[in-house]
Image (cartoon, rainbow, N blue to C red):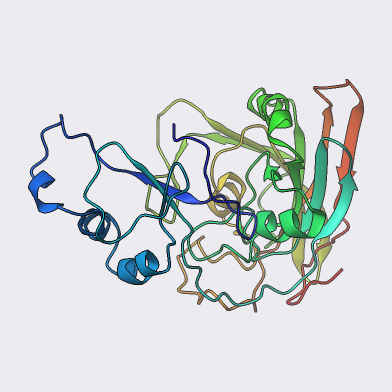
Length: 311
């Protein structure tokens, strides 16, 4: 683990860090790094302007002193810096704060807004936006919610509260209910339960079903009503695999309206907000693991999710 960062957070994000290798480990590149600049050029991608960042004093050692281009290479040194952030298109819609107390913030997020800063979505993420807006520098999500999915997301206000609530999710003590818009197939009889084994390889966009493997994904599916020829489905996941709900409905021949991954992967530009996924994380209920209180939260949104959801 690195030491405490000498750089303060920026936009609610902690500084990135690297560590130089040890001289006592065999390294074919060791003689190629006479200076720290040489090592940083080797270690960071080509698109990073290492020379400009060194000139601006943006790399600092663990004691807070700037790393200079001419500094001799030093083994086992932690180097901290803030990455340059790309310009991001603004995601439409409103983050509704459904509940806030000492330990928890429950928000109702619009589609296309990432829960955490990652990849091409940093400033346009729940964490970065709300850390600044609510003045909570340690705010962090307690479970996953896909970028294209709308609805409830539970966050811890401080690092010290995360363990208890994350353990509750791991024990499946959090009851989550979703609603989705999807086609109607008259031959399907509801309620029904889909049970199978889902697997998603790192780097692949779609998850897949693994035949004859032990069950690791289970969803109760109920048809509640019709809207403009589409079904409104109530989904109760009993497990939490990646893309579970989207893949389970696709398997039944009723893929969720607006899904850019199922049945086929669509090449949707990052700034195209025209077709929201019609999947809503609508309800979350649990017994609070800290004080034993009964908790139940409900989304303020309703299907169908609009193109520019502000409600």
